[in-house]
Length: 77
Image (cartoon, rainbow, N blue to C red):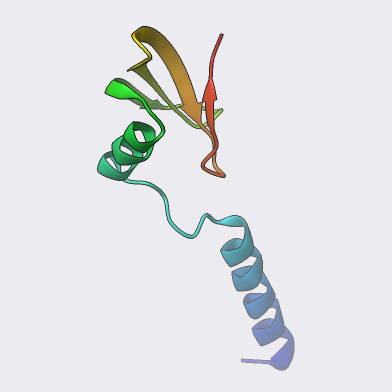
């Protein structure tokens, strides 16, 4: 393998490693994260373009939420 090919391969691997999340949440981890943020009855979990969407209850109200790729929890209006 030439040095040029090796360099390109290494560069591609570094780019993929940089832009790929280190750890995607499992469903159980996601539910635990949402419960620790005050949500209960987490359900209808789906992957969307925005992130992972779900429905839950918080402070007695039904809410729709999205957890983005950085792990931020956002309530939809």
